[in-house]
Image 1 (tube, protein in one colour):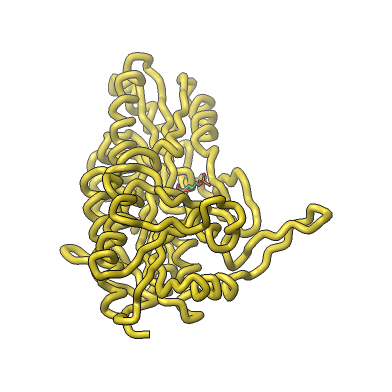
Image 2: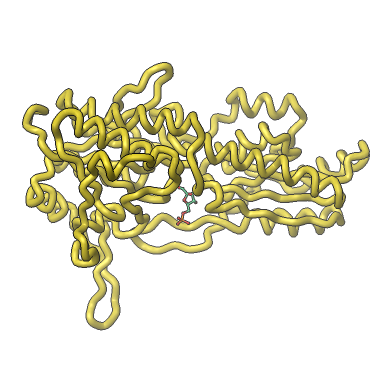
Length: 369
Ligand code: F6P
């Protein structure tokens, strides 16, 4: 299909939400409308096409100028999202309640044809973009847009949503400093990020944490306790410990809360564990704060709005140029295109020799090693 044959496109948001989703939707919709195309939002990931009976008003939302007006600054996604019901492992419940997982990707592509949707802009993280890559290989015209507060997608300098999450976590560290100091306590702050420590690292350094524990550096809790004691000896009777949800002790494993087929495992609980261990080792009063979904909610900051708008517009430009099977990516100062399968091949971890870790070490922050 040549780009000139595009008349109607769909946008979908998959996986956990992130600040900036609506900005991408607005930019993609307006750019498409300005080319004379129609633009539709698929509700709740692909549920709008795979479970249309769930939606009284239909599983597709027509994204008109009116519908996307005034949404750039809004958190969440106006078309909904889900991190369940992957078309590749779609859950089907039998009469006896047993759940089976089946591949509905071919059927999904038929649904696109049935609705005369010529292309898809898939806004998502590693899971959603891996699905997008397979749909592209099966012949659907697809452009990916990198979203996640975790910033763990390879081949883009940054994903939208990350900076807003870091800014919020930093603000929380500022607030926790005064209460920690007043009570002479150890405050342990657990943040999201899955198997990458980007949020913990960037917010921890920006917010002057005393300790930062990330999945990339397995920690020795005794080293953390020593750091807290050393601070005490210097007259600092409080400490702030930033912990990524994927952090784990040397020789230990990541703490998983829930694991189900067709759904990424839920992490969490390491903050409580670190706090318990530190109380035992230091004798100090310790409290845990889990920032969790607060990091995902609320308005995108100006940085995230701008890259989200740039990504959405670039995705439509890519379609107009006849591209498919690619992800738009930030490669400062420009937005470029990278193959979708390369973007999802490996996770982007924090490099141990990166400048931010070196800076943290120079400042005397303990990384638990
Ligand atoms: O990938 C984004 C993310 O927010 C992770 O940081 C976190 O582990 C996960 O999603 C939580 O997802 P949910 O609670 O929505 O299942």
